[in-house]
Image 1: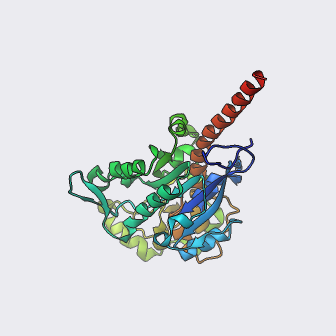
Image 2: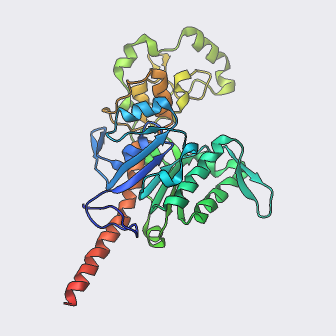
Length: 354
C-alpha cells in the first residue's frame, strides 16, 4: 500500500509515510508499534504507513535503550521545556501523562488543573495539539484514568482535547485480547481533527479470544530456571508465607494463562508485593528483564543490554506493548484507505468528464 505525507488539509497524497511526533514514551513500545515491521512469537507485524520524526523523553536510561534500537533518535528533554512551535510538523502526535496528577477546582463550571508538576505534562500535550494541529493524536493511559478524582477528571480531559479542536474516541483495551501474553488494561484516546476521520474510525476488534490467547509459558526462558540469581532466598519465602493468606501475596502466575500486569517495580520485586512471580520446582523466582520484555510483546531483537538490569525493568514496565499499539495504529490505516479510495473515485470522475 502506498500512503503519504500530509499537505495543508492533512490528507494523504503520495508515497511518503505520515509523520509522527512522540512525547513521554520511554524506550519506544508505542513508536515501534505505530511503525510496525517487527516479529513477535514467529508472527510478523507488517510495516505501517507512519514514520516517527520526533521523539522526546526525560528518562536518560529509557532514552538510551530507545536510541539503541531506532534509526531515528529520541531527544533527552523534559516535555515541559518543549516550545510547541519548535516541534517539527507532524500528522500524528503520540503522548501520555500521569493519571493521578489532576485536580478539579470548584468553579462554575469546574476546571481541570494539576496537583503537581507532573500534571503539566497533559497540558503540554494539549498545547502542542493547538499549535501544530496534526490530523490525529493517540494517547495511552492506565485504567485508573477513568476513575481518577472520583470519575470527574476523565470527562474534563476529553473536554480539553475537544477544546483543542479534536473529535474523540476512547476505549479500554486488554492487551491479552490482541496477541500479548499479559492481562494489561489500558485506555486509548484517539483524536481526530476532521469529523470525517472521526466518523470512519473503529477501534480494532480482539484478535485473540479466550481459547487462543498467548500463554505466559510461550515467553518464559527455561535457561533462567537454572540460574540461582533469579530465585528468592528462603528468608524471603518464609516472610511471605507468614502473611500470604492475609495479604494475598506471593502471586504465582499460571503458565497457561497470560501474565498479570507487569510494572516498572520489577527491579525491586518482592514476594510481599503484588508483582507477578513464577514457581519453578516448588521455588519462587522473579522474571528476567528479557522475559518482562517478551511479556510486553517486544521482539527478541530489541536490545536492552545497554543499561543495567534494574533500568531495563523500569523502562520495559513503563512501556506500551508494541503489538497492542500496532493493532490500534493499523485501525487508523482504514482512514488512509478511505482517502485513497476517494482519490481514485475523483480521478475516475475527472476522466469520465473528458
